[in-house]
Image (cartoon, rainbow, N blue to C red; front, side, top):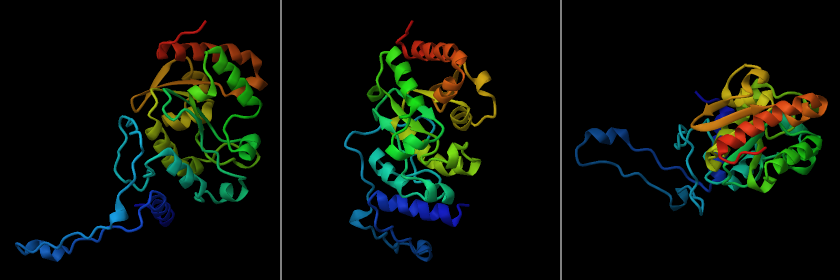
Length: 257
């Protein structure tokens, strides 16, 4: 049973999608009187807007209006919904802005991190600090640019002092992450770091055991590797990340040396 916060967030998402009035419920007392069914009154504005280019649907994800999944019909509507979210009181009160995601909205590959840092919180874009510069170099080595992939995080707000996301924060943001992936519908996801991998795959397995193989998430191929920030602190792990990236590229059909 959804709590009051979830219900209010769901109603906000409907408002963001352009829904101003809900249909009236039927008079159920009339259903046992043959020939006298009360018609449902509908508002002309009650239709959910659709994207100009239909999104691919993500296997295994329900398209119905579930209070636990955002109903946003486009990434832009979802971005506005995220910007208004206050489910996590501490994060909402300390953030400069939400950090939604950036890149190609029809990308085959999504890069998933854990949460925004100070630079990301200031600029509103994921992976723009030193870790982001290293990620750009990895993409360049794969003959890719940021415009060829889609980059996003598990959390859309920066946790204070860059601490790891709390379980309830990840759960609150999951309705946005799942819908974001549903609208993009990538074929591949690369999880950058333990927090991203464990949250997406719902596991407590260490990143060292998750990397080096291909996982499945609702029909999407998932490769896990170390976070760029970890590589900056532990340069010796770069060779392992490069092995993971080469595995990913082979799976995508574009191998690199």
